[in-house]
Image 1 (cartoon, rainbow, N blue to C red):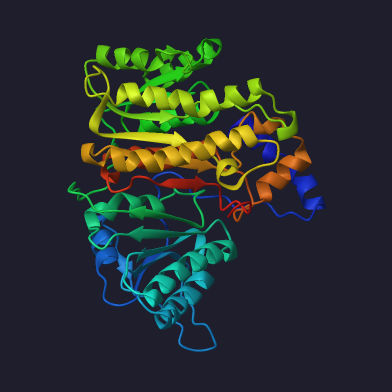
Image 2: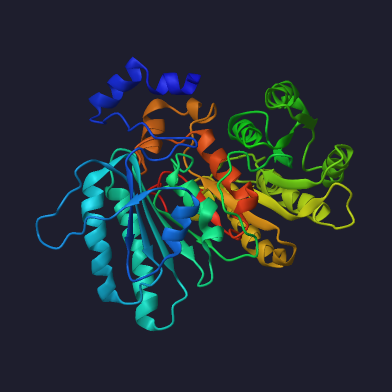
Length: 448
């Protein structure tokens, strides 16, 4: 248990929380762990995509309990998850079937259980479009009504998405790796890549660069991608050299002391990759800074420094690593993952410069993903909410507790939650996921 976790769960901390009428937050299931209760498979129509994917995952499923009256029926034992195939939902009347599946499941879901809805956005017709969009409101609301650390997720699929395309996404959503991803929706397309298993070391034999890796979220990203088999090139500024070396030694990677804003940063990274004698599978642009001030007090220096580190520098690095003539550049089929923020998606008082940079990351992801599709390079981002780090540990207790509790899971996330989502996006099996920004925020109530 980290110092931050000990402080958060200390007797004084709990006493203050209870005096304020706050309950202890639920303990979340994390890691490559499956629900302990039964996985229930429900359908709207005759779609088979979810059933086929659960079969590939090797998960046994049980039939759903369906509510048909005013007295909600229940499950005999707590269930681990309800996964609904709504790919054939095309009418408003069919939403009643979803309500009938959800009501018993929400009542009977275990702690850290999962509600997952798989659906299509691309049906023809006004009613089909309206019914599909209704699912987004249902998903977000169910996520806010669940208790005990249970979460809800909506996965959009294309008409030609296969079980192979959906495999890593459904595995991630069911496992504890998605602990702090709640009330969110993202898209899975279709690809020519075919996989038939969810492996525990998907990055084995692959090289991944992680910037800002000396501490906090960056250090945890390095640990998780190394756990998943990657050779890690950990990057941070020279003043963080000692911490950076410790992280690199811990994960068996290499450390590069580098200011990513210098003009030749991309060339330096490519040179180090080339010296390893292998290609580059992925880069995680985690490095970032804040220079918070109200806009009326934000001068040019504060503005430019944040935009430079958080956005412009990674664009320059990408240009070098994406050049096919660069020795040590990004392989075809590689991965680029940016770190955005809920501040960029929803805005945050006193962070105009930071919000601009993080919204820019989201825009960059969307623009690059289509341009790089022909090379099968995926580009995605995560958008963390309130994550417990040494930096957030310095926020005054009352203010910190408000930030922690301002989401559906009643707690701050951990750096590992961000890292697990990034590792899912780096997975070669996640080829069908690109141009997406996934919020790792526990369904933060700001901008939710």
